Length: 92
Image 1 (cartoon, rainbow, N blue to C red):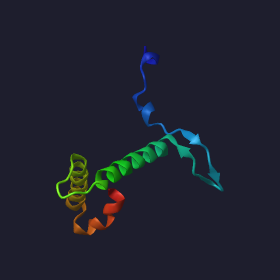
Image 2 (image 1 turned 30 degrees about the horizontal axis):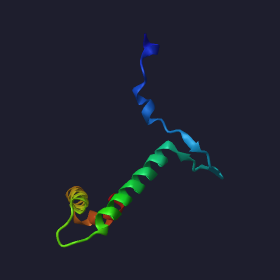
Image 3 (image 1 turned 90 degrees about the horizontal axis):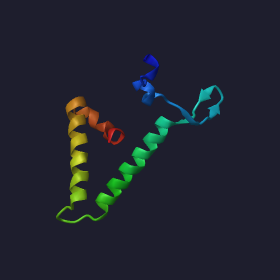
């Protein structure tokens, strides 16, 4: 009966896609780094698309981009204070 159960933690296993060894360091390209790269590409594409047609009256996409910017900025300011805003580009 126990063999029929699926291990729910399997989705968090990091598997090597492209093994790379530099000296004693393992800098392999993994499934985790693939997902991070996909998110960066999608987020960058969305923000570029949303800000390309700037106008006096913002479009829906521009409004969503500005709201996400404000949300992240306010969350960081609430959590880390004004001094934490120096890390905003890394967080956003």
